[in-house]
Image (cartoon, rainbow, N blue to C red; front, top):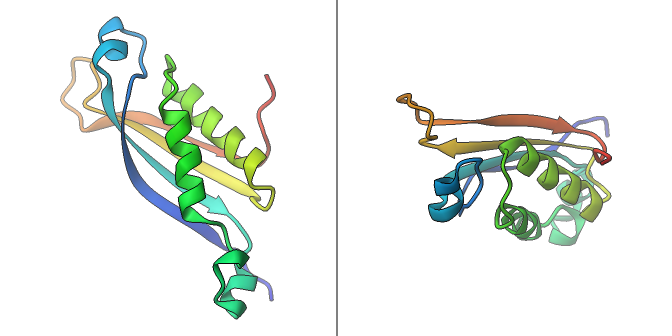
Length: 125
């Protein structure tokens, strides 16, 4: 079967202590993380078995662990999430990560500011 498929987790909400300002690290802020993960679901289409697809709960746990680890930049957080997902689940062919900080402290009236990253392999340090 010729097809492309993705697993999607949209707008997962977290309270985390990311940011450059001391107040951001102290009180934290609200974030949304969305994922679009390239993953072959053809076996699951036929079998209807959870073992033949990517476990959403396991993906969420990886994201939650990375969100709990403070960073200065959302770019760094997105990269850590992508690296960890690619490392943990070898069947992933690509991952698009969006990390958005709600109500960022930048003196502007905006819903959020963040980053979108697409990774096909781990970023090396």
